[in-house]
Each structure stands twice: as C-alpha cells, then as structure tokens.
Length: 228
Picture: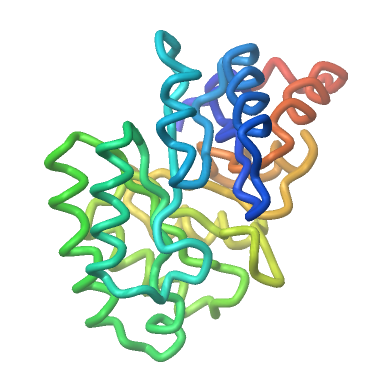
C-alpha cells in the first residue's frame, strides 16, 4: 500500500477511565494542529470530540465492547447505534476474545454478521480489535479469514489493556493473511517514531496511540522521515 504523510497514520487516542473533558479538548486541539487521521475517545465523549473537530478533516473514532469484548452482541449493537447518533465516524469494536480462545468461531462470525450491516447502513468505518498479544498464530490467522471475508475496514491488534500490545510479527501476520482491501491498525505500546515506523513498514496503515505528537515530532529528527 502506498505510504502517506506520517500524521495521517495516527489515531490520536485517550481511553483511560479517568478521562477528563480537558483531556479530550487537548487531544482534539493537538489532532487539529497536526491534522491526524482521527481521534479515538471513550463513547461518552464522542459528541464533545465531534464539536471540537467540526470543519476539520479529522475523524472521530470510539470504542465498542471495550476493553474485553465479551459483552453481548446486542449490547455492542446498542453502543454502536448510540455512538453513530452522537457523530462517530469510525467504530473500534472489540471482538469476543473469550469466544476466540474457546474456538467458538460460529459466535465470532455471527457477531460480525450482525454488526456489519448496521455500520455500513450509515456509511461508517469499522475496526475490529482482536487482542493479538494473547492469541496464538493459528487463532490470528482464523480471525484474518473470518474478518477478511466480512469485509471490515481495519483489523486492529490491541486494546492496550492486555499484557502484550502490538508487535511487528503480528502486523506482518495480519498482512500476510488479510485481503489487501483490509487495512491494519497497530495499537498498544507504541510510544515513539522508531516503533511506529517498524509497524508501518510491517504493513500498518493506522497507529493507535496517545503519543501521536511525540511520534510526529520525533520523526523530524529521523533521516527517513521523508519516506512517510
């Protein structure tokens, strides 16, 4: 996939449970300043982020079933609908990690088949988070197969809440087993330009992080900045 300006890889993120209005305002101000691809905020802050980013190109993303993914599909659908009503452009949906670990692939397929038409009916984008750091290689490949066929927009590595976040190896595995049309979002533990660069070179087209400013400003001192 063709490389973009570095700032357009960034989903500038704050998802901590103690998130303040001031945190969202700062996040959005930075996203506007650096013209990031998106901000990713808790569902209760979607309206505020949308207001802060009106008349900009920056998208508003939020999380669904976060961070563990084992809420009922009906609950995730309700979250999705409310988020879209509030103005979310992109939905980062946590897969049912427990179902994946138990090999209940029918449940995984059933969930995405119920979610996709609702998101597509409103012209929104969907990213599925599979928490790759706690999955086996075989489980990751099976997820790539199911979600690739479903036609999601992004497969995302991590919530940031598991014991292991994004890895270059997992991003490479995603890229090998996903259709080209499905993008990859690497997230979880990406805090500097060097790590972000590795993820991009492995195949990621989005970087989810709270360190977006540090990444793009850190790139200014790197001789390879012009490649992105």
